[in-house]
Structures are given as C-alpha cells and as structure tokens.
Image (cartoon, rainbow, N blue to C red; front, top):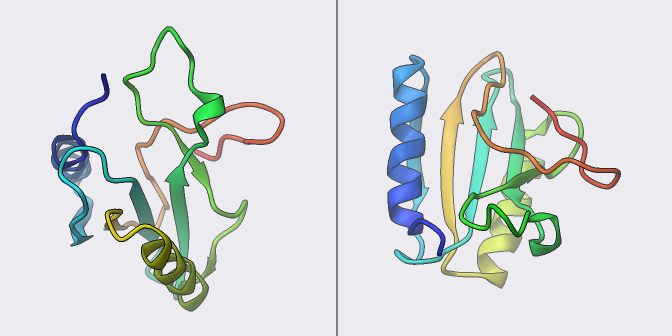
Length: 121
C-alpha cells in the first residue's frame, strides 16, 4: 500500500524546506491517491516537470515508493510546462501540483531508471 498523496506531499515539502528550497502546493488533489506532478522553477523563465512514472517501472519488491519521470530531458520555457500541467488537470482533476523554486534544479525525487526513462538528477 502506497503512502497517501497528502502525506507524501507534506513530507516532500518538508524535505525541500530542510534544504533551504521554497516549495508549495499549487493544486491540492485527491487526498488518498491523487497523482502528483512536481514543477521545478529554475528562476530563469524555464522549468522542469516531473510526472508519475508508469506503473510498469515499479519494482514489485518496493511498490510503496513514488517514482517520477522527467517530462522532458532539458528545462522547458515555463509556459510550455504550464500548458502541460493544464492538460494533465483536464485529464485528471484529482491530480496534485507541487511547485518548487531552485536555480540548481534540485528535485529530491526518486526517478525511474531504464532505457526509456533516463534518470536526471
């Protein structure tokens, strides 16, 4: 059983805060199991977006973890990221949006690994 989305988001924001990075919930989703999207604002007009990884990348021995994939390999203009988030919310109104601001692009997320899902730290 996976951690409730609300608890995961609270813990994630605490982790960011402990590193001196500002983060906030932009859109609150379903308390129990809403998908979580994390936008990392690079403070230069660009951003990275991390989306939930497909179920196929989850390790059966560790099903409780939340694993993410970068929506693109490189930072994108914030407007492009916002367009993607708007589409995601139209598709899944129960999704969460968490936004973090960090010039270095640190995200503290577990990223999917494999041929189709490069890890970007």
